[in-house]
Image (cartoon, rainbow over all chains, first blue to last red):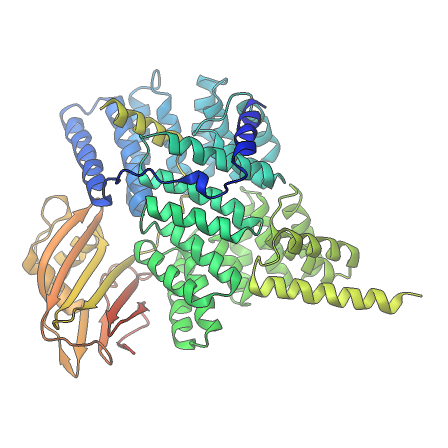
Length: 435
Length: 161
């Protein structure tokens, strides 16, 4: 509980200034080019050293970490593969006094959605030092991704005993977020931002990521202005960060500001073509009546991510389902993934797809699993409410839809409108049967 | 050095939870900008390994160390794969710079005598011979406006509005 107490104490001080708490240091930061030059020089240095001494487990570990950092900054999947390869090579040379490399390996495998591999690496890390809060929280993070919530709770409960650090706070926040404690998640995310601001050894990409996560929590609860302020601060720290641009595009889409969505989304995809952002752009052009551009994005989506093997990107899957496209394909792929990864958002995609196919009884079975962790997410509640309404479970539908709109009345232009329409219909039905 | 090493250690612990690398998409970006003096500037971004392989194959030239290819080969490949026609005439591009940022290659090209891209015909098939799922982005700034369009294998020529 130490982590919560400390973060809570910060939150009590910080509530009066939601965005200004995240001020950017006044000294001009090094340019992205300068930082990239230093990073690449470090990579070149370790690559060179390894040609001279290929048996250095330490250098391989450091090189793996640098590849991982560059992957986050440039979007290179090749660097993630390199990080994995070097981390494995380092551990093959020596496991003793090389435990941190399991952390690098777990992170690289998580980035590739190899959750089983990441679990193995995280377990090795914990076996070495079970009392380490960082180790436990990394293990918990992997369990969350796999949908093993009881196991995640066991790991995070240990991690919670120590004061939160930059290594634990964002992962604890994710646990709280997924398990129905959005306020705690928000507090912990804000605390993580505070910790990151106090450090002078983080890259702009890392600082921006903490701000983005804090913004995501605000966005989820409908505090769009605060979320946008956090995202903007992140962009001041790390200009052209595609994740922050995409996050701002999502906020714009929820508010129906379609021209903003286009400007932000198209800036984001210049750095990294991300399936969810392509979907947002397609919706924006459709909303503005530009079917040629909308088709261009739909065609790009069909040509790229849908041709990839493996699990479907969740945001992309939901986008297709919302447009009643390729339902059989989405269902088959999400079900394949659910065999090993039984997480709430997998069940949500399965349930939403089944609903679109008119298979509401099956959809309800999936949706009950999707909401089982009491995740405070208006989209999850909206989906559950719509399926419940289709099955004439009126009280349950009313409850979910009311909660979705109460948490965030503008969680989605289309979703919020449909939720209101169903509630109005249920209200009429109740009035009509009243004595 | 200690601070940098500490940052390195932190990087191990702070990898973003949703790094979004599980669905890498093959893409190349071309950004056009028309300056007031009639110069057309073009920046191209592509992953170095794919790009060098494509240039090498198309021009039958060797890939140098670290995925580098000669300027001449680059220009020949790009001029063919990235086509711009203004008023029915093909724009002749000149390569002015080629640089690397990690795995990414940046190219800078320019052409003179282009006042606007309105009505220009564009085709971007960079690297499409390498990957069936290649999606290319063309961003164009001209006449005080910005326009973005995508190219996949099913696309041929597009006219800028």
